[in-house]
Length: 358
Ligand code: MRU
Image (spheres, rainbow, N blue to C red):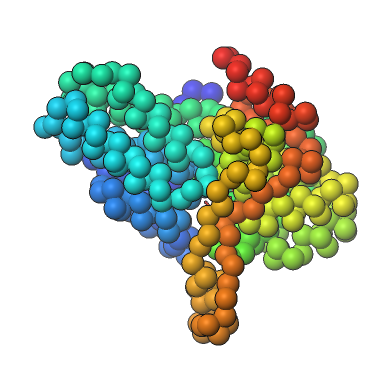
């Protein structure tokens, strides 16, 4: 597909019209308010990622790319040494905002590598290179999502029921999304599915974002609570599970929104194929298994108070609020990437697609 400026502007993250800020849709406000935020400082960028104003592994990566470019604009008067030093410090700060999705560090390191490989280049030229690299990260994500959508579409047939967890749609990526990419692409081509969207406790990405995106696109979506997935599967209403991913380890274990591994276990029980869909920027061969993935722990208030008029638990009650869980590769039917559908044995086949130079 040919990616245009219009495609990039339609996403949840892009450069502002004057090119001096990262503009994001504040995803914490959806579906009730569509608010754009402009991020110009590293603290604003860190905070937007940390509190999930921008979220979804690929969208965080795109945001990190643009953030590095925007931050470089404040370094115009420096020399190469100070530029590299300051940009490295900004990059480290951004990476520290959320630990699990590999796309964040992947994008920051890609931007820093560009500076390092152009050692001694005048700063104004480096800034131009960073601009183009940030645009490339965004453009590639749109292309990758399109290819993932094509591959995913080949795994289902018209009228199938598809269950998804969390939000891996356009808001979380760029155009199409990953897990919901086949659904949006199918819809464009007149192929319709019935989608079940888990509400996705505790931050309700499925209710607030996935059902919003699908409903607005005119796609048949039914919102369910997380604990209803077993019932809809048992009823025979689900022919495939499509979920996104935040980091895929070398052996095919992958981290995704908390609750994903439970969905995978249910799918196995009911004999339903379970797929995770993600770009190659989510595959991390340096992490051998899911056991080595750093799982983010979040504020207990997200469980106790955030969505309620009154607290739903005593303030002193202990909470455990992991943002992600790891799905064991043995529960995964296939991993759908922008370079094709990867079947077990994952260790061998993931390595092959990562070595594939096009
Ligand atoms: O905490 P979030 O909302 O950033 O978690 C997002 C997910 O778990 C998504 O499924 C994943 O990032 C893939 S988005 C294409």
